[in-house]
Length: 242
Image 1: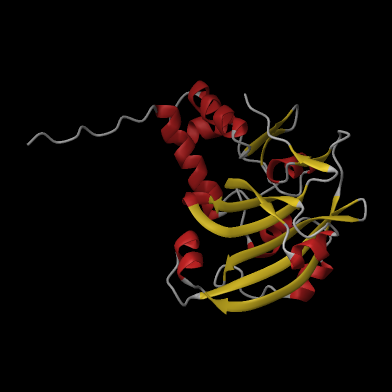
Image 2: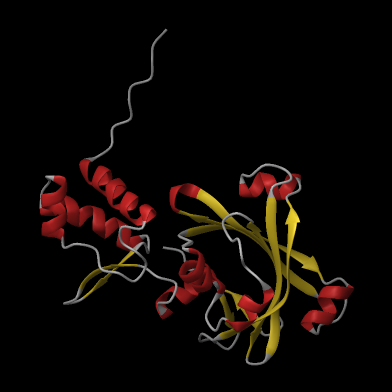
């Protein structure tokens, strides 16, 4: 019986994998500069061109950020440019509005079958559940229910959520060392039930967007399962395709 041939990986992809290992282990933390291309080339015994190709691909994936005249830095959720990557709501009139998070609840629970499957943990393992509102210009536009692995986010409390001034992903990155590097979303239309209608200040039965997101950190590890209801009375979900 014929065996499958080993998968060939271009050299620059191998270098990319080595740089990713450095990011995953915390050798270079979010916001910090990585070594220059010449230093990385010497470290990995490859050409600068090979390193440059690996870094270019990582920059295109928003893992690294090039800054003219300053070097290449690990991308961070504290960077304002990262804001729109994970929140695609804009006013119908256009532009980008700053959001304000209003945490409502934060409690510990045991993972049921669905949460365990999505977060790739065992049924009954600890999870943390967060409910919050997201406001734009003083109006509530999003109701989120967020499920997090309890061991990864041990110590997260409602007081911490209320006191933090940045985004949730910035909090996860700075306090818990967890950086979200990509997410998958499933979007469908639903009708507002009584509770969501009250929270979003819309009529019961009004159309909403249901946005289910799974966010991943390094190593394709799921570390957040989020279910949100979005009011689109004055906002729309923008996705850029290229």
